[in-house]
Image (cartoon, rainbow, N blue to C red; front, side):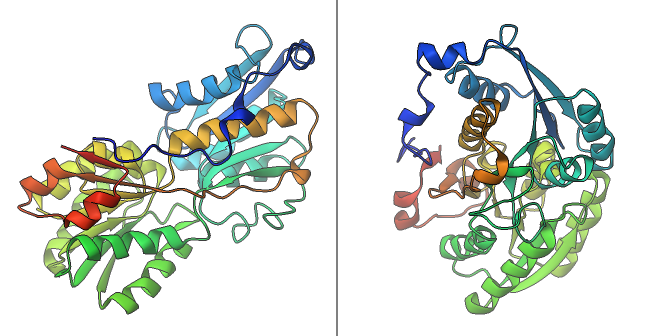
Length: 327
């Protein structure tokens, strides 16, 4: 049941269809490259991006071409895919999450890049600063700093006060995860929680990670947001259920797949905001002049079906704050 409607990062009027005069400026067919570590063809994300552009006057087959390129979870393919988009001479590259953003920046210093879903764009060297990005890169970060990952641990502790030992699953192939893990460590100190740090670069490493969790007798699992983990969310949900582990994630899709909780910005909302950045650049704006945006509203999603299967009772105070409760 919906508890609160997710708020867009800016008033919806900014996404309104342009005037007729504005539409006339888009008569030239523009080309956008979309680079993702996992498939961008899932119906909701692709539709959110396309709809955002459509509301701004961009229609595929009329004044717009979108070239989708996906590494399908094999992030080592991203540099070649980014180079392919550069050879196509696209007008803008949209980079989905940190690995894609890094690959795009390494591929070109001239083609505008709009990233979304990155953990720390300044720390990663994507931009000089949030207010003044500089260069050819701008976009939307996934979090305010890396605090949302530590906040996830706080919410897990609030939901399950008796939790004392938590496994943290990260992907060493994701450049943002080192900083995210440091943030979780800082949060754990104040929560009297011990962490077991585990890694998985590929799905075939999940079994070893969960074996480590069983050996370490952890009480719960925190999954650091990652494209490969998102792609494998059903598999991860099955493993957490098999091991009877309450879990918290950074993306709601993981909770819809069977995880217990998630806390983070809406991926779909960021896609629609990314469309606004693309629109501005196609109409003449320079990335260096477009400040990086950070989310101002975060979603808390709780899966009560999973809680029931694990024999857990979520505090009513936490349920009341949830943006969505899956029953």
